[in-house]
Length: 503
Image (cartoon, rainbow, N blue to C red; front, side, top):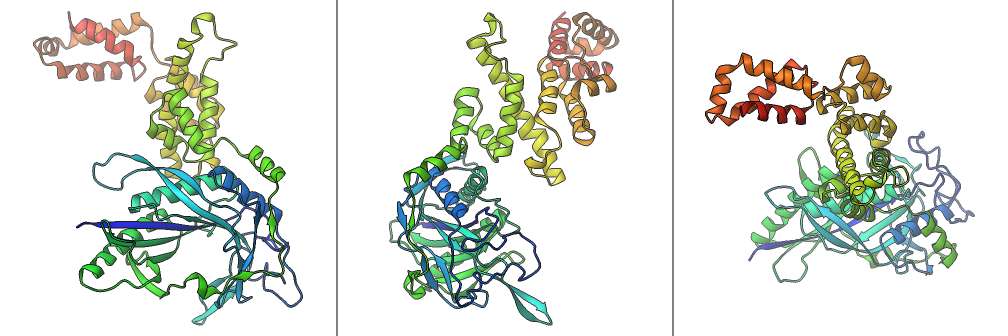
């Protein structure tokens, strides 16, 4: 019998409030160690926690975005355990009554290997609860000693717990990416994985087909999608090897070493009863009113799944294109702005362009924009290590260039030169086209004269073509484009060449 993989994720998302969840201390990243550890964060005698309203609002927004049940009343609890960077000896969290209940997230899965096709899957979300972060142990801080930085203690977190619905590293990575996109999309977290704003704990187990769930091991604090894939793949194979050798799997918390590509046990895994949860006596129950739900719902933007559906159904894009364009809200907004600039408006379009013709032009504009954003623009962002929010080319500049490609003023290769200039120097597409002499030749007479010259000079090749060597057509296209210095309209050139070569 084959092995089945069972994966569930616990994701800690740092909420984008300016102050901590139970105090007014700053959450600014990168401050000098322990300069933001206030009296409440380190639980000095006599202090009382006060709940941050902004953290609650962000949790509610997330719940609405995943179609979850929002608890009208939830309770904060103390989770008791000892660790050097936990100054109070307990963490304020939520246990049996979380603010966000059952929900779901639809993911697009790209298989990591083989010829399998992309597919869609729904991952159930068990809960999402508010809690405070712990501090940070800094190993080797001084003369081989470990220091403790409590700046992070008290930072607001939303812990998002999934059902064990994933059965491969590809699905786990797709879910984590979709969640990462969503929390940034709705503005509740900056999602900066390098700064620890989005950290994943992955629970992995294996079982024979049809058997009960196996013993899980939890891979802690993964802050890279690539490391997540590597850690799951290694851990799955390790567990299978253990079981096939007759050994047992023991529940444990484990760490992944990216240098060796291996996981190793850190400690035995605690169960809920080990933490001795009890309601925090200093915090009242959290009540979510209908007015709070309405306010949060009104602030939600069009969500990624809805926008993907609109791109496919209304703009005629492929599922792949729609998924790529919704990889970030900034990319999707940029795309929408470009399409709006290129597509004819109902008010300004003549009667002949209304209805089906206008819809067709919108689809062509959308596909042109999608091709350039997914291709040239994304590649340049990757080369420069930039996120979409830092793109130096505005949507006005981009649509100005694309409009010249759409009306055949500019060839695709000329467009790349214009785009590189816009990226490096700025400016406007029309001015760059004029200054660099990139305007495409679309005059049929000029193109015919060009083709006549080439055919006259290549009589032997023409004879070969006419005798059946159709592959020589590319040879003639290359000569014509070279003679026109890349400015000939490709569609017109091909049409004229076909006609002339046919005799």
